Length: 221
Image (cartoon, rainbow, N blue to C red; front, side, top):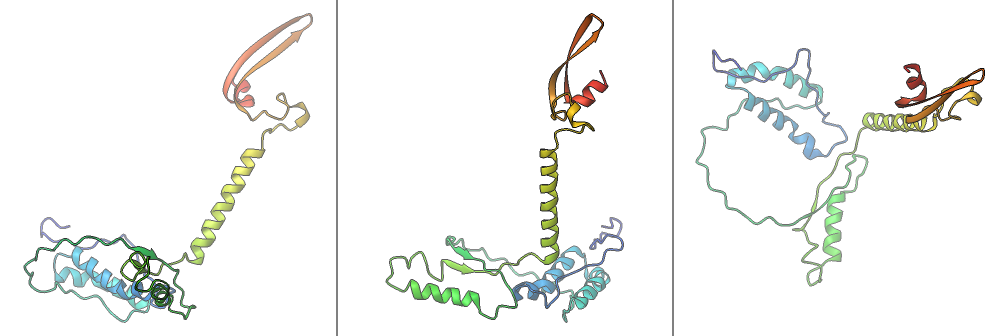
């Protein structure tokens, strides 16, 4: 925002290049179709006028072209503002959504077949027709994770399991396990310990407590 000129423009971080879903990506057509429109609306809202919009548009048009889109974003304020009509409040209908995962490899129109099944199994006159019909059952495709996110989440889960297993099974770090003062449990923390020192015929006992492991606690005693 420029306070002197009273203008504002879209902000991009230095060396940041916009990146969008490719037009031939494995996504529902409704998503890829509306990407240019959504970008155009966003940049227009962040631009104070058409001149600012024209200066900010080239990187986004280049990113769209790189992703296979033929359309470019243009400044269109929609003309003169019209008188807003008071919207009538309608009672929202309770809907049940079916969200099958989308894939270009599936030739069957899953959404259409689903609605046909609703018509077939819940015809007019059925006791459940009021609940299961085209007005109460909606279909919308969902997107699955890409391979990159699947692999990353899988690796992160394996690493967490390894760390948990390592921390859970490792209870002693003594070089000579047989000489461990706590019989293989020296990595336990929050303990009370007693040490007896004998010299000749005299012996003394020391009782202490530590919030850390025994090795760290006795090292600072």
